[in-house]
Picture 1 (tube, rainbow, N blue to C red):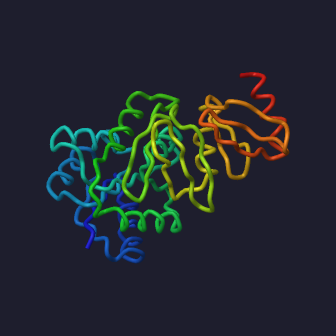
Picture 2 (tube, helix red, strand yellow):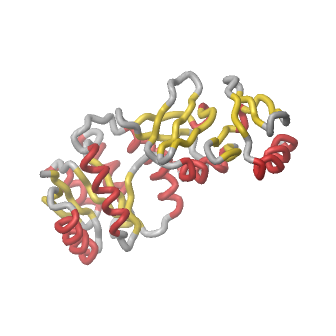
Length: 253
């Protein structure tokens, strides 16, 4: 049995989540509920659940307040946090960079099943939960650009400087990150997701399989159909339809 609590100021949503979990995840048992920051901190402290389904907007504050107050009282949380949110774009971006799970209202069944699978996979793993600290850091600073990114591997969650990522390579539904002074990191997410996340950080998709950090581009070679050489001396092909844009970016660099 996996223990969980629901922290949301909407009783209808709490009831709905109870019903959904009872049907799709009978191994996840709701052991407590809360409707505001104060009772949220209390229920986390008292029950120490393995999973917390946490709404962002509460009557007396936010879900981030719950995490900060709980951490101040009891130390870092060891619960698996799943945020429930409307369309707060700033928060969704922060979740993605922090490798934290979230569900959009109204809750989509397919997304819920993905989150449930991840809970089952990770709930018993020991984690330092540094990605929660990263989330709170980014949220409180209200920054538009994030310096660090959390990447989830089979071994756990790792934080890296965005500026240290040299390139990303796609292989089916996996993405391999090549990072300065680190071994390659394999993530079970598609390259498209990271293309969207990293677009504003100087990353460019040059091929179906390759996303590069332009800061590490060494040269562009026109022969043999066209390819780039990165600072780690990796040679990567360029899709024909990407050549013109890449040349424009190089000129503007």
